[in-house]
Amino acid sequence: MSRIPVTLACWDYDRTRALEDGTVAVDGVDLTYLRLPVEETFFRMLRHGEFDAAEMSLASFVTRFAAGDAPFVAIPVFPSRAFRHHGIYVHTGAGIRAPADLAGRVVGVPEYQLTACVWIRGILADHHDVPVASVRYRTGGMHAPGRVEKQALALPPEIDVAPIPPDRTLADMLVTGEIDALYAPRTPRPLREGNPAVARLFADPRAAEERYAAATGIFPIMHVIVLRAGVHERFPWIARSLMDAFTRAKAVTEDRLDEVAANPTMLPWLYDEIARVRGLLGHDFWPYGLEANRHVLATFLRHAHEQGLTSRLLTPDELFVPSTREDHVV
Image (cartoon, rainbow, N blue to C red; front, side):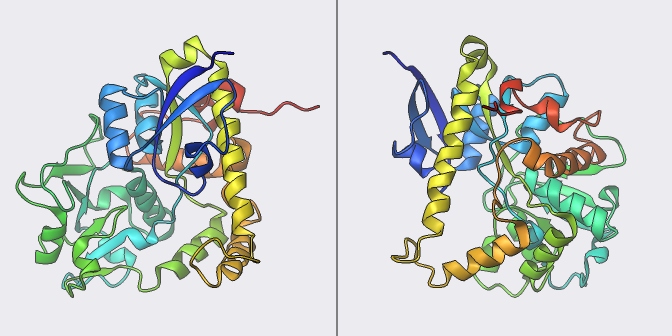
């Protein structure tokens, strides 16, 4: 029986590895898994639509969807999630000792619409009295000059966003104090190298992230899986087949995490870490599907709207292919 060839671009995750190595098959699909860095995947899919399906920045998808210009449809599979308190970096000479000190400052962001930055701004606004418009944002490459927004934005005038000089990087400007702080999904090189001019805002970011999780029940979603609209129109069943396969692949990894007779990882106390995470976030701490993620998605959509990325407040239901919003019952 012939199977439909589908090319999927996605990063190297433990929860997707069973899809990449063929341990888990996609029903009716001959899958080609392209293991690509996330920035490359997003750029190539947003600019050129190169893949049948791809991992996608949640913010990029939501922004395009709200503008009525999304060439993709989404399924409620979230290969990347991360807490983001650890992604706030400060120039140590700027006098920023607490989150509220960020108000009135100049803050670098690789792109204003990055999902990680949407979460950071939302967390700071909701929990630390840093309104979105109280900060001036400067965009550009972290370690290489020339990065620009992947897609055009129509922001309200009270939000001050401008690019840094084309020959400069955010990391260098943070070291020199030309920007006071940086919100970013990747750790800036000066911090990794021990430069004393750069530090994290939160001295104990894990503690701050655990407090946030306990207070809100949120484990932030970063990425979603999308299909080109034309693929979905021709083969609408592929959306559900992909969702089910991603779910089975995640279950393979969950089983490995519970293996203690022969530790599959190099972490000696993984069993204790898993128990700690489940105690805070629940047994299924990385859920797929709409209902299990409704609160997280609604919070993100509110942040995106309040930050000027969407002209209206979207609802979680409208983001996803109808066949993936619910399960059949026997």
